[in-house]
Length: 123
Image 1 (cartoon, rainbow, N blue to C red):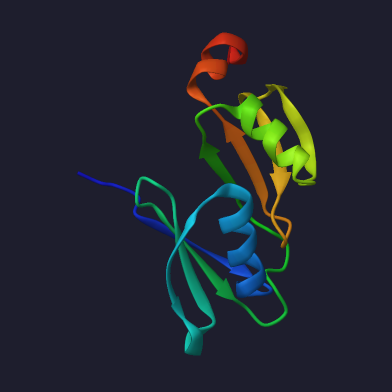
Image 2: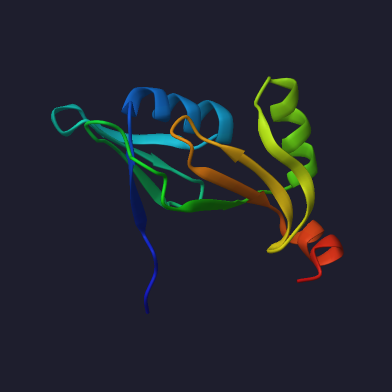
C-alpha cells in the first residue's frame, strides 16, 4: 500500500499562511515547530500540509493544491460572502468542474466536489 501522507510547501510567512488555510479552507492546526518556522495543518482525512517558511518566500509557486469539498457551489458562495477573492467561480475547466483561488503566496488552489464533477465536468 502507498498513501500520500503529507506535503511541504515553501511559504513567505508561516503564521499568515496558517491563518489563511485554517480560516479560509477550514483545515485544522496540527502542530507548530517555531524554531524551524514550520506549521502543520491537516484536513479532515488526516492529510497534513506543512507550511515551511523560506527566506525570500517560495519563489514562483510550483504546485497546484486540489481540495475535494462537500459542495463547491455552496463553499464558493460562503467564501465569496466572506470577501475571499477567486480566480474564477465554479465552472467547467480543462480538468473538469470547479473553482480556483490563490493562497497568500500565490499557490493555485482548486476546489471540486464529486457530484458536480460527475454532472458538469465531462472530462
